[in-house]
Length: 117
Image 1 (spheres, rainbow, N blue to C red):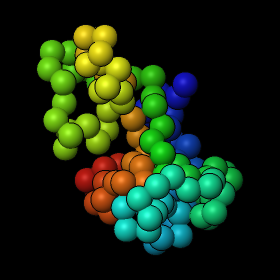
Image 2: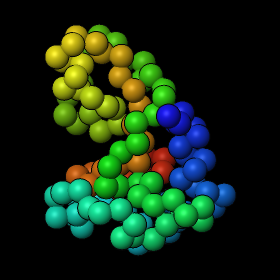
Image 3: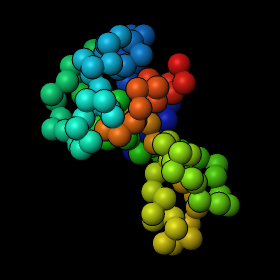
Image 4: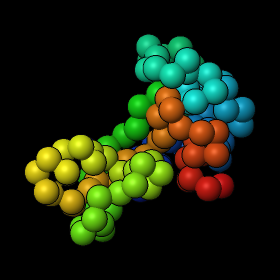
């Protein structure tokens, strides 16, 4: 499992495109506006320079970094970058892992390699 910084390095693939292989979101990313609200088959979009597909959008990548959150469950809006609130609520384990890459229900604004750019 990659650490968040390793995921970012792989997503950029030695380039500076904000959408992991493109400056145009629809070339590389499945997100809220183009996914028809469900997962898509991989390799339908353009790969990045290292032939990695779906680095952003479609499904998030669970990283080996703890989020630092430990007391309360996240609200749905805060859940964007953390993984498995359902498991955490069922087990009372709130040691969340960081997720990167956005997913098929992400808004366009949350689909950059570095969210918020």
